[in-house]
Image (cartoon, rainbow, N blue to C red; front, side, top):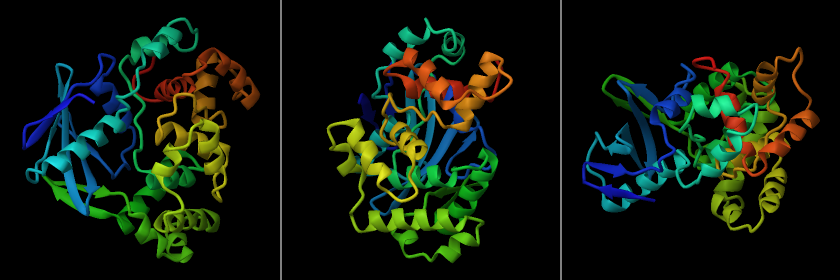
Amino acid sequence: MNWTCHGSFMELFPPREFNFDECLVFLGRSELEVLHQIKGGYLYKPVKVDQELILLKIGCSAQTIRVEFPLGIPSKQVCEKMAKYVWEWFDLEQDVSGFYEMARRDRLLSQLVRSYYGLRIIRIPDLFEALTWAIIGQQINLPFAYTLKKRFVEQFGEKLVYDGMVLWSFPAFDKIAALDTSQLRALQFTTRKAEYVIEVAKAMAKGRLTKESLQQKKHRQDVQKSLLAIRGVGLWTADYVMMKCFGDPTAFPVADVGLQNALKARLGLQRKPAMEEIKAMGTNWEGWQAYATFYLWRSLYGQAV
């Protein structure tokens, strides 16, 4: 991680293959998003660290990410944690040169990587948020998933108001662990999803489930197995979390409806491809299935290619 702290702001120096504007397109894809806002070319996000809500104002120029702290100068320790958060959020540790080399030779991806060069997988560094968002999104369309997340965050998260914007932090797992399923049912969660989210929160509150313990596992199959052992987590959810929270470039959510729709459109098919067909296509993307998926998702919104 390459960065410097200047007190009221810090600078991060990302790899060459990074396009902040492309990342903003992804982050701005839903008007129902409440965990961050984009205003005047800047990205605003509150992050909870050491029981304190820190507001980040993120901009980029000349391949330098500038992170300002509008609500006060943080300590050096907090500044370092925020640098690590932003670095992970934009997946900047990943050397994507191999992905671009592969994608330029691939008939499905070659045009996409030219159009969206510098787009990085936008990760979800917090394990509880990643699992909850994946569970919320199971078997429903994306707009309704955002609606449920908005209700959940506004009911149980922490609010911050700045410059006319209302921003929220994701609810803490210990707060959700104390809930009754009826409180999530009131937000239109299904009974099953309410149970799954609360059970995940309880496991994390008791220390039985932590991001650190999963990161210590030697093989990705062991991480996947541990995730699949969680009630309510199937293959799609496990792959999604491995991709978005753990930055596994080989994670491949073949059951993802967005991926299926993107492939249907790119290939001009009359139907969505079956999972076995997607797996067969993925043999060309070995080692970079997550990035291939993310770029195909990107093709579903914004400017057409």
